[in-house]
Image (cartoon, rainbow, N blue to C red; front, side, top):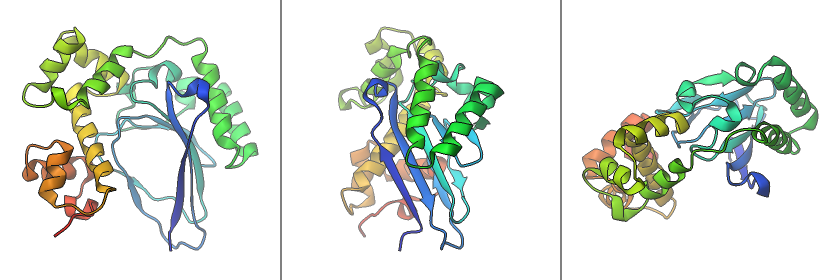
Length: 249
């Protein structure tokens, strides 16, 4: 029997360029103790846990998650690089942090949103978060489109291999220094770390297709070898691949 329920929902069409999804979750009241981990994904989330409205991420390692029995939460996940205009500050300021939204938007505006979330309940709450973000983005500068190009290039097999970041910078028509600065502002960390996170997420996605040997999974995800895969799993998830993935023996 599952201990918790988690659902990602399609966001409103007018927000889809900047928002990846909204989400809802709950831990069943019958569960004595629930412990999970949040793993890096290159995104920032706004989360309402029923009492606190905060911003999560971007993370560079595993973050423990242990809500109490019967607890619920809702959230809104920005696409990588698209959170700073809505939040009003560089993503790097929030790296590995869980910051109260009031510190970014002010106590008054955040309090209004929190009141609406408390009154809405779990089903209607995602729309409340969408409305709040829509209002914040109405007068904000657009997201840095260079980052969309960076993400597309890092996931293109044509550009993989040694010297990846210099190749990507040249492909995008900027210097490595400029690419690092703009990536750190938009994502929260530099392009090398982003590449590591994206590769790890590819491995997680591939794992859904069913059991594979550790070496085959590492190669398919783009790791240099099995040892590289093991090191990265420990750095980004705090676990070995055998603990994380449905690998064949």
